[in-house]
Each structure stands twice: as C-alpha cells, then as structure tokens.
Amino acid sequence: MITHDYQFRVAYPDTDQMGTMHHANYVKYYELARWELFRSIGISYKSVEEAGVMCPVIKMNFTFLKTTHYDELLTVRTTLKAMKGVRIWFEYKLYNEQNELINKAETELAFVGRDSWKPCEPPAMVLDAINKHLNND
Image 1 (tube, rainbow, N blue to C red):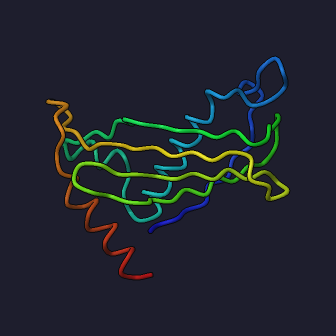
Image 2: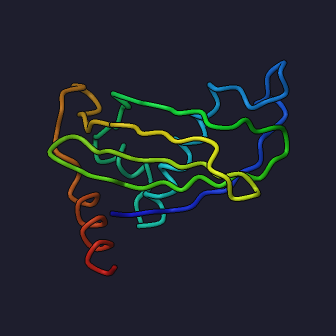
Image 3: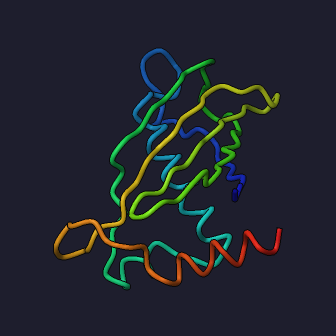
C-alpha cells in the first residue's frame, strides 16, 4: 500500500546494560515512524485528534533478528498494509547502516472516539489522503 522510510540514531539513554538498544524503545521508534508515514501523505496525528479520534495500538508483534548499538543510524521502512472498517495495520522493517534487516514488527490500531473510546470510522481526511496517495502511485 503506502511505504515511508524514517531514519534515526540510537540515543545513549535508549541502550541497556548490554550496550544494545533496549527492546522497549522499538515501540517508541515505530510510533514515530508510523506518524511520519501519515505526515508524508498530509496527515498529522494532531489533526486526527482534533477530528475527535484516537488510534490506540491493539496488537503488536516483534521479531528481533540482530542487535543495534548507541549512535548507529537506523532506517525504519513502514508500510501501511491494510485498512478495514475501524482497524488499520502497519508493518515495520528496521535496517542498520549496512542495510541488514535487524527487526521486523507489525501493529494493529483501531480508530476510537476521543471521548467515548468506542470504535468509530476513520476521519474522512484520513480516508481521502490514503485514497489520493494510492491513486497517484
């Protein structure tokens, strides 16, 4: 569907006693990469929230293939895989500076009303931006 690359350096406080990026930080970087994908097609998370909608993660799955260390430049390739009803699925592939795949992940999010937390349809601007991007490819 839609793919976007996001780069970052492993920060010192994101490493653990073993000298590798702590597994909890993958969640943070994938969150940033996911919203940068949205931003690349003209949607900010702030605008989604302003439309009265939140997007909680309801499922995540990670596969750790290789370690990474402080100051390494990494690239997250995020793909919006599918969107059906109130759910949206993303896939992440994390590459090191040698372009080796070091982590794979998937997340599933739901669109919910900001006040009710009940499932709701995605805002029209989200659907429009995704459809516009898909039709231009």
